[in-house]
Length: 185
Image (cartoon, rainbow, N blue to C red; front, side, top):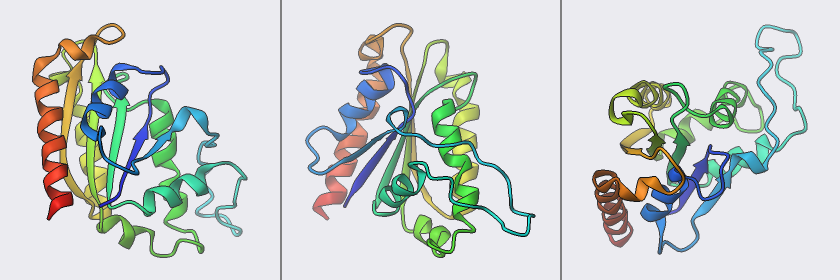
């Protein structure tokens, strides 16, 4: 089983990263995509133009190929205004382009073979205010037929504070154990 983690946060060692790393620690070969380290242009909707979508020469194609190579994808993002980070949203918006990409004609089929998880941390009642984010991911996964393996919503108001959220730490440890069992099967 191969795992790719897509990090949407902007703070090194942020709460979302801390919680996610607790899940994947000890796994060999985890592919970590830190979106802030790459250039992913916003989508320009050219679906209805004669030329259609064009390659924009950014890092997106290389990143989506890394996602397509994984069996399991973990989307890790802070909760920003009841949704995912701008980096994460920008990346996922570009999936509309990939659906029409002649270089990746089986994108939707490839996404059906994956299991996805969401790990998000917010500062103010994230178990409630993070639910719109989870619902948005659920709709995305449903559209592609991707199995939604579950989610963790952690709480952290300041750097490192998620470690004090014992409920999310317990869920992270349980998810890690579940992934270990899947590797052993």
